[in-house]
Length: 415
Image (tube, rainbow, N blue to C red; front, side, top):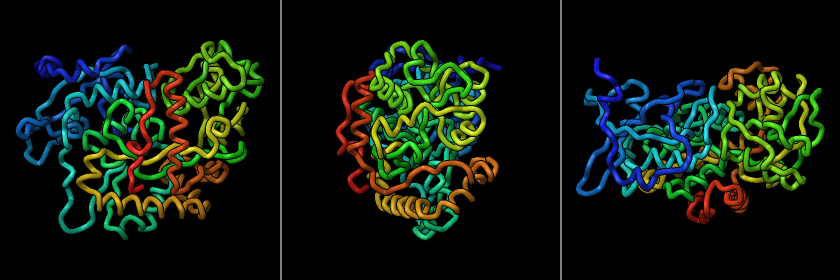
C-alpha cells in the first residue's frame, strides 16, 4: 500500500504564502464534527472545481473526514494544506490556540477569490435542511428545544445539528460549505472577520450576565488551595478551552484591571470536561468554568474567585450564530426563516426554564439532577454589536488581531 502522504498532492498555490503565520504548525484534526475526537494531526482535503478563471469551494472535506463519497461514487480531488496548531479536538495537547492563523491557512486555497459554491442544495419542494455546528454547552439548549417544539419545521427548516469539539473547528467547516451555520463565541467571529474571512453574525446565542449570581463564566480555584484572591495567580497556571478565545481575553482583561501582571500568568488549553479533574489533581491552579461544570465544581470543592464576564463587558453578546457571506447571498430567504426560528427559540427558552432543564440532559448526557441545579445562560434576541466591538478592541490589545473589524461588516444587516 502506498504511503498516504506520498499519495497526496503538495500545495503550490501562492495563497499559502499569504496565509503563513509565525506559530508552530501541526496537522488539523480530521473529524471536525466529533465532540470527543482525539486526533493530533491529519490532512485537510478540499475538492476544487474551476469555473473559468475562478475557484469555487465544493463539499469535499466532509466526504474525506467521515469516509463518505460524493454522489458520483468517486473520491474528491484533494490538496494537502499544512496548518498551524489551532484546530484541535477536545482531549489533548497544548496548542497555539490562534484561531486567526489556522482559519486563514485552511481556507487559503478554497476561499481566496471565490464566490462560494454548493449553497443551492435543497432549493426544491419540501423543507430545506440547514446544517448547524454547535458546541457541547448549555448555551445551545434553545436550538434543541426549538426543534422539538416545531419552531423550525413550521418554517420549512429541517435542522441538522452537528456537535463540534470547539469553535475553532466550526468556522472552517462553515466557510468550506460543510456546515451552513455555526455557533461560537462572538469574539471568534470578529477575529475571523478581521483576518479577512467572509464571516457574518446572523443571530444571537447567549448574553453575558450583569451580576455574579447570574453568571455562568467564572474563574474557579481549589477551595483548600493557596489562591485566595486574583493577585495570587501571578506565577500560576490558568486553563481555558481555547487559547486566544473570549475566555483568555476576558480573564486577562479583568485580571489586569485588578492589578495583576498578566505576563506572569500562564494560560494553557484544556477541553471543558478535562478541566475539573486537572484542577483537582493540581495540574493547573485555576480554570475557566461554565455550565454544566460550574455548578458541580462549586458543590464539590471548587471556589469561584469572580465572574469574569460581568467584570469584562457586562451583558455582552458572548456567543452567536454565524454563516458565510455566500450562504447569505444565495440562501437569503432560507436564512431569514432560520433566524426567525432561532429568535423564537431564544425567547421561548428564556421564559420556560423548566423545559430547558428537561432538554439539557438529553443532548449533554448529564444527570437530570445536575441540569436542575445549574445556572442557565441568558437568552435574548438583541445582538448588541457595541459589546462585540468592546471584545474585539480587547483582542487587539492582546495581539489576536491588528485592528477590530467594522461592526456593520461583521453583523448581518438583516439580524
